[in-house]
Structures are given as C-alpha cells and as structure tokens.
Length: 320
Ligand code: CUA
Image (cartoon, rainbow, N blue to C red):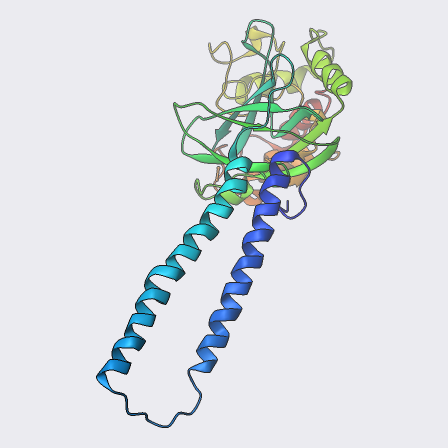
C-alpha cells in the first residue's frame, strides 16, 4: 500500500508530482538553512549614512517584496500544470467504462456490480475484483458516516458521503493484487476497514462475474446449520438462494451486514482482520468482538459453540 509504488496511470501522475515537490522542497529548505547559518557570522558594527540605509531598505523591498513572491508564483504555476493533469480523470475507453459501485459501511465494504439493466446483480463484500488495463469508474457512496476510498497504488482517494454519489476513475496497468484502506476516520474500527483488490485480465474478470451471476443450485445437507442461520443471522446477512421459509424475519434482502453469498471464496474475514482458512469462520463467529472490538455484529454468547461451528462449516462451502 505505497503511493511510491504506482501501478496505474493516475497513480504514476501523482507519483511524479510527489517527487518533484519533495525535490523542490529540499532545495528551498537547504537554501533557507544556509541563509540562517549566515546570520551567525561575526560582524563589526557599521556606521551608515541615512542615504545608505535607504538604499539597503529599497533592496529589501525589491528583492523580498517583489522578486521573491514572483519566483514563488512562477514555481506554483509550474507545479499546477502536472498536478492539474494528474487530477483530470483518465480518458474513457471506447464505449462505456466498467462501472463498479462501492458502499462504505462501519466497518466493511460492499461491492456491487451492475447487471444489464443497471441494477446490481452481483453483490459481494471486502473483496473488489476489477478488470486490468482499462479505466474503471468506481461509484462511491456511504451507508452511514463518511468513509474514503483509497487504493494507494492506483491513485486517488475520494470521500464516500452518505446520500451522495461520487465517482473516481482508476486503472490498473496489469493484473495484480492491491491493498486498500478506508482513509477517513469513521469510528473505532477505522483501521480495521481494509479492502482486498484484485485486478484481472478482462476475460478472467468476465468469467468471474458470470460465475457469480449463474443461478445457485439448491443446496443439500447442512440442514441444522441452515436452520440456525435462518434463526440467528438471516435478518442481517443475505445468502443468495437461501430458502425464505427458514428466515426468522420478513425482510426480502437483508443488507445490514455483508452479503455472504460467496464468503467461502474471500481471502479474509472481518474486512481484512483475519485470513480465511479452514475453521476461520467459526472462530470469527465466536471471537469476533475480541478480534475486531466494537464491530457492529452483536456477540454470539447466546449461541452454543457447536452451532457456531456448524454455521461456520456451512458458510465455508459458500462459493460460486
Ligand atoms: Cu471507514 Cu474509516
């Protein structure tokens, strides 16, 4: 997660502005430092005539009051050009840019991929998959407080404001994996709001999406786990294709917590706080308030460990 390791055109533009400003700042600081040292030199008191005093004063007015500000203005203008260029959105590809919606929540990320009619038809959480080698428009919004979307190696950083959509266009040069982090203080777990970003070749991305668009096969087995999930979890979490009669609530599509439809395929749990591995979900369900204190999921003290392990084992099978 370093801005000094750019992996896309927007980040590269910002990277060069960063180095140029650092270079100039170092030169300015050095000059000032030398001038400051110069003031310590020993001097004999001099007697000057009023005329000489006037001439020295005039020199200060011209040098410090006119020339120096002029040089500063020119230097600022020189910086303004590349900075402005870096802020102009990347050019659009032929046709429309891929559009991905990102919703900030305390303290996790909801990612929505629009389908044919513009309605989100693939919803996932805490793992952002994007095509590489083409600009992508990220439409950003928040479900609660102000968050900020930031993939340091791709550039940018943009606020996610409740009730207002903002867009940032980013591009990844090559398929790779990037770290991302919420960049606006948003509460106790602000630092625990990590996002795993994967840039893929276009065809892999399309395959990834269509795999998730394919209708779910009705599941066999895990009856007890699914029953417990319906009772304890389904009011907040959605699993695509989950039988509605098992849900202890009449919400058609619960969006309080992350959509769990493909949770088994995610690299982390709790927005980056726990790596996904066998048994990790059950462990998270039991200890999530210790692993990520203050997170919005209530503690599960009223559910026995065996049931939590059942639910965890079932959720681990949730892959497209
Ligand atoms: Cu979300 Cu900080």
